[in-house]
Length: 291
Ligand code: PLP
Image (cartoon, rainbow, N blue to C red):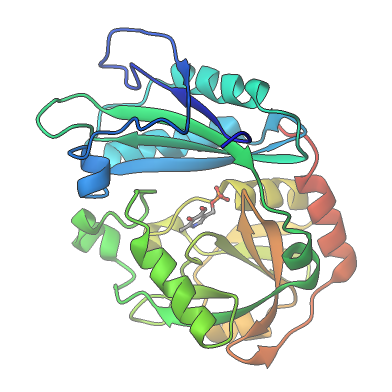
């Protein structure tokens, strides 16, 4: 894997004795088979996009990493060590326009009481086509009520855990139905998020995204879109939305660090349009170096 850089963190949490991150060969086996990240998907991750060698919104990603750890009762990640590891991985990688940097922390080998942590950097796939042509999206039931975070916190909705098999299955299901992506809705029909992105809807001069207390992630890309929108005089709001609201919206985007703002060109088989000038502007902004 010549285009992949691996940095291992011998002390990924604040509970560990300090030790510097170290480069490792990504082609050499590293994890034990009894690591709980492997056997139970018990761990957390973040995916950061480094544009032109600059990790975007790293502070927001590290803050969400810490929140996910807390929700799983994992020790607090040592933010500065992770920050160093990310910069080391980016610096070690040959220059590419966009580099994805994945931070992973697992509960570690069963019984060891020590978390495993690593950072992997690899080139982002060229997302030009979906960013410009948009995606067809199917709404899918997540099967949980809107108050799942308080009524069933053990379901870990709202934490970015390694257990993404369900999210990937939802994407495969959408693809078997001829769509490119999915938007989850709660049992009551409230709009949640996509399997790997946040939902942002435009209503005139206002951008709206659903609230995190529905058991969804606080998107770093969505946060950047909102900050940009406010800077150019648009209003932003965090509000509950129904699928009917999405059909009424002007532009509708799926937002994520890797794909940035992707316009939805079809929702449940209904073609949609978007504000092309606004979209070009937000995409250009997301590709500028930030923070
Ligand atoms: N929601 C889910 C379930 C995700 O997996 C992701 C990103 O992977 C997002 C939202 C968007 O988060 P971000 O913009 O920080 O990439």
